[in-house]
Length: 293
View 1 (spheres, rainbow, N blue to C red):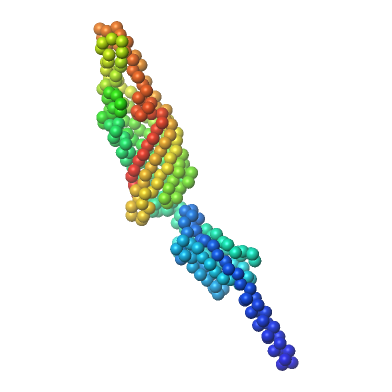
View 2: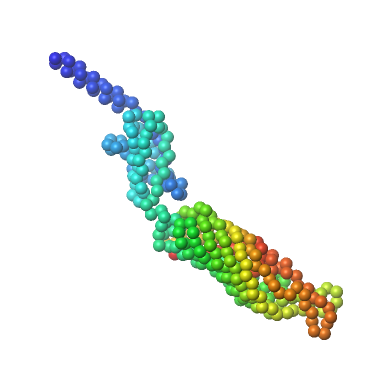
């Protein structure tokens, strides 16, 4: 009887050692679900905590496990824990983890939902341009561009004017995270311009040029897209570079012909400048730099 008990114990111990001896190497990478960046110091453990490891600086890991292991648990502060079921043949794993407060951090710190920017290149046309944007949801925002032409002029000509242009807009962000956002934009446009010098030309006889005054009131629309990039995504400083490229329909309505008192000659105005680089430019490019708060 004693011999039978001894044999039974030895068989159980041999079976356990054999099972423990059936090990396999599990390796892989743990990364942020939305940014794709590897997550360091993630704790990886088995159900009974007998085997464990942590991820490297770039999120990679290796772990020797018994083949009978059914699950692995991935845990880190600020991230939702993940359980991965292991098949008998599982070797390489790519595991994504999601931050609890991702929705609030998609574009900077949780409380920062407003962007204010300045359009520096507007100065070349004698204008001050600013942009304001308010984020309604993760991928939706409304905003407005405002251009004040304090000394408006034709860049390669002599037109002179003052006035303003207002462009309310709606944006849908196709992709948006804490570092970059790609968007589509639809806009309305209204504006008023007071021309102190609207030039008309006649190349056949003297005088070759006359100037008229005119008040232009116009409206239109714009469609386009672009990208917003957070230049320094830290907790305290958020400088944003915002680039928009699109099409706009913003028509002029001044008379194309004019005459001067006492002269029967007809003078003509060339409107090309308005649609190529002027306030009504059909190709609309806006570069804004500012901050989010």
